[in-house]
Figure: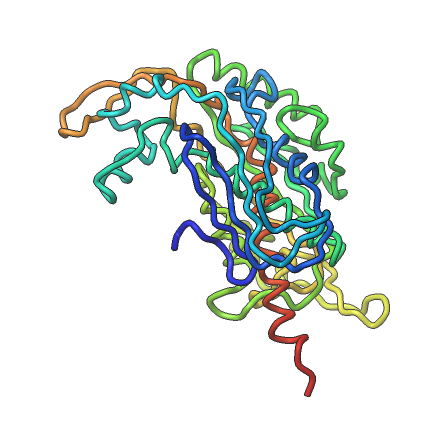
Length: 366
């Protein structure tokens, strides 16, 4: 069903924005993985609302409860059920949206598909759903780090028309550098400009979007399935399944279309201990849908937050023209809080492909 992601390492998310709780069920996690609720909580704290004066003021502690799949600090191999209770619901702020469709939101399309919708903050279409993804991603991340030494880092490279200068982030940024400011941009001068822009549009009752870059190192060659389940295809699906995403590119991305083959090809060269390396990495760590051992890097574009505090033209459920002004608590820019969500989805994709690779290629010897 569409609420489940993955093939062997799967996550099913559930819950609505203003319902009693949200959460996830993780299945396929290998047994005996050391795991503590505090490790999941650390990632949820990065995603939660109310972190700074440039995000939604909704006050949610997002305290995770592990209901199953863990015994004496280790996973048991059975489904891991994760629950986070909603504490600061204000469904009354959405009363007007019961009959009016918010522009560029999922209100109309959910109504068209199901004939019924939860108008309170978008219900299932709300970014509140990503709580379950981040909680599940924390488990996948622990599996990748402990079992394979994989590191993931996502961060902002653009907000509206403000971008980090080209080649300003050559080194793999540390978590401390990313978390040093509320926009999670490791380039401090650009971060300051981003913060001011977000504050400006918030004062105007408007919103802006941005771009997140994700870099992953330590992934061995061989992950990914040819043709339909290419590693970059599953990464793209995972990222574009996130609320507010509008674009995905890996490696050279669209810029690579403007190069010649002689300019774009990644030449192979001998590496240490008999490994094969590439001199450049315009492929973004994936060739033929399979990881090649180089750093994986990709970018995700997020649109401006759809709910703005300005009057907009729309229609009601009867199809009559009307006007709607946004209410409630919303991020003027969703991108800073999306950083741990992007990392979580990347971890879920990689954990799933790692298990699939092991199952096909490591369990039998002929």
